[in-house]
Length: 170
Image 1 (tube, rainbow, N blue to C red):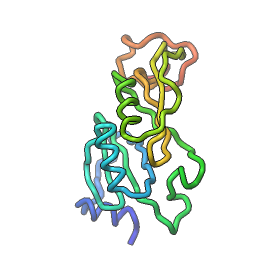
Image 2 (image 1 turned 180 degrees about the vertical axis):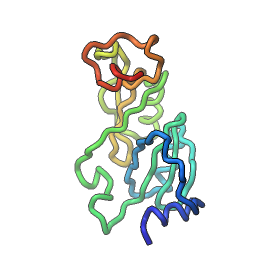
Image 3 (image 1 turned 90 degrees about the horizontal axis):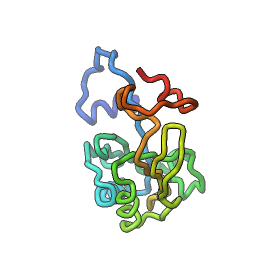
């Protein structure tokens, strides 16, 4: 059976939605050695909420931002955790009112401190940012202002050479 059909069946989706007019959602799937242990860590360290749990695949969210955990698949080299692979090709970016607190909580729960949290200048304004690497090898960057700020255009600072998503958003 096709993986998408298996997933839809497992979460109770028996029909393909007919309305495809909703905008796409981009999310992150983090490969971890043990989905249960990782779920426990993300809940305790970052305040994640569990959306659903299929055992080896778990849906979580932090402050409304969904992401997924996927247990390592020894039969697929692409599904190994970054620490084992020795590299990571992605960085999870999180924006919150208190990045200092998030980083402190993560490190207290076993994450490795990353770049020091400090005020940084960027085309979209000065923002506070730092980071950590979670116990599963994923790099997290935590800041207080996103270049993809969903604030109305009239409330955003003027940006000359910022990311197009900021300059051109309606």
